[in-house]
Length: 474
Picture 1 (cartoon, one colour):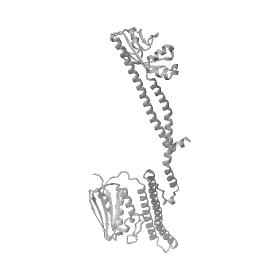
Picture 2 (tube, helix red, strand yellow):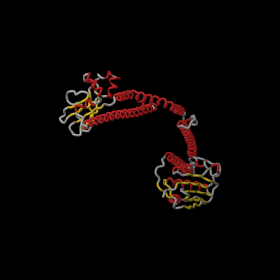
Picture 3 (tube, one colour):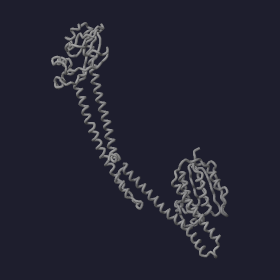
Picture 4 (cartoon, helix red, strand yellow):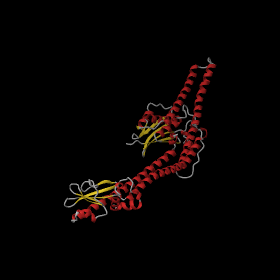
């Protein structure tokens, strides 16, 4: 169950929001509490230092040690001689080791004063010597006097000018502020989890509301089948991500619809093209078997072999088209088009009455696949030769950043209305260029696929086919 819950986008976003807010709020609260605590300690230390300076001034001015107590009654202090004996203290000279002594000269150290262990009368005097405690403990919180919580004292040290006496004076952080800091920490421990939980709940409902259109789109797309690709999802109003997602889905469905339609048409056309030679072969074999003595076997076999050859060419073209559509572009190598033209025309024997000429710019180099580019040009020359009256011309030139390959013949040409359609598979035109001899109906479709794979374009105007390919960088 937890695994399924974690897979939910709503839960992950809500959990992330709650955790982030808890970290942020907790870190902010800790920072402010530490800052407040630091200010309390700093104020206590400064107060202790000021008290040491006050006693030092009295000693340096010649005030006897035993008279110091009559001059000061609002602080806890100790005056100790070089042997560590307490000579004076406030509020009373209690017995035992000096309470405040122990810190290094000129420094500040920390001791604890267990107020609840002191006799009640002495305790009242101690409270009078700690004015920062009196109002808080004696007036507002008398019940806290008997608590076993030691009182923190920050003690400063100093010496008289004659180096005879060590002076210790103590101060404690403001208990009211200290209590306020403790209260703040308590509230933070309660408030931060509650606020974080509230933020998580708000994030849950906000994400749930935001994803509701996405779920509607998903459900609608799930109902679309291969037989219903013409259907489109509803595009909600607005300019945020949801309408753009719906528009992208509709674009994808349109592409799928086009691809499936082309695949169905292609399958039907391929079946028709394959059925023709198969029917011819079957008829010839049936006649040969029916009249074995009246039919010339050799001639019949030659006819069947021609049909088999045509089927092989058709299947080979189909396989090539399938590879071109599914293959990735990959890395191309620089290919001089002059070498492609030479490889295509060298050793070629045009049909009777047709001459093939070429004019090539040797600087025309394109990034590409040499074998595929040669196949592109051979298909164009084959097509032009079949429809030419007397001549075919191949030209390669450079125009701006493109290499332009043109193949022209002096035949009837393609009508302008069929200029784009002629590059589709198995297209049969109605004029004199429709039924060629030996063509599979896939030659120009292969040309278009190879050109697109090389980030180029192909177009036809009359009897001139133009292929534009990006020029290779120098």
